[in-house]
Image (cartoon, rainbow, N blue to C red; front, side, top):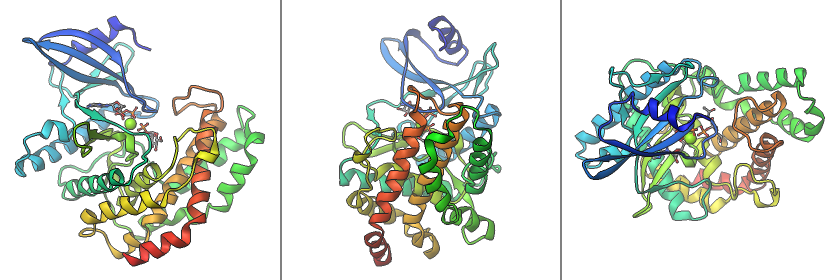
Length: 367
Ligand code: ADP
Ligand code: GN1
Ligand code: MG
């Protein structure tokens, strides 16, 4: 953890005015370290978000920031042309350093960035109520639409093969061979499940390879705590965590939304009886989503909506289990079997989804 003096020194590198009043750690993301500062600017208190970009995960943080600058500028221009008066609440605003760079590199070689803090918002780790699911579906539809006419430079692949299921299975198989922490014997049931589902899991990657699924700009991390809801009226204001915005199929994002918005408990819940797929939340989510996305989805994409949720959950199970075998090198963990607990919720969620598959298919066909 960076201490207060260091973080104050880092904050001073960014073009911020007034007096720094306080700074504290913030948020529950698995990847970056997030802080929030408060400044007194002429008697008004303003807040900023500062993040140390995880350089093990993002080996070229400058490319991450280049992507984010392009995407946020694109969205800001769109919102301005649509006459929104709260653009700085509806997309991230990157604050540059005194030298004009979108990041600062400290003496350890760590990359830091600063955003305007988006205030009067709340986040959810999972949902309990159907109207919120509808709103969330709409919001991702709007976000996909905002990115659909991005014409800037081709974005960097900030994590190559991020959603490539073939690659993720290879990583799992390599980790299993090494079994560096001698954990493989704990997870035979989970491995068997993933093996049985391997072939079915290839549908999105093979769709992209064959051209049946078109490539666009996608977020790649649309889990629901990366969307900020207004405290006032529960509308979705902003999609954050743009580190993995890069080329992909739109179904990666729809799938991650289904994974995180229709599960009945936390991603790391240890009591698996609390983990299920909630069909009512799914229906509302998809209705909200299609109210916007119907205009740009192909019939093939619509036929794969539920499958995309199953698929992204499966890739998360593979990734969590791989990290468990590797000794928890990638995701932040706070207990010994944290990654295994996460993998287990994902598998339980898929099993629950499968037990309701007939209803789901009927609903999707009715669309
Ligand atoms: P990670 O990659 O670690 O998930 P995020 O960018 O998602 O990092 O940030 C972690 C958390 O910090 C978010 O879930 C959100 O609660 C909060 N956060 C990040 N950026 C902002 C912002 N600009 N305004 C308000 N809250 C933010
Ligand atoms: C990570 O950064 P965060 O916590 O929003 C991960 C996602 C996973 C998610 C699972 C760059 O997201 O891919 O879906 O955890 N981000 C990265 O909770 O690997
Ligand atoms: Mg996040």
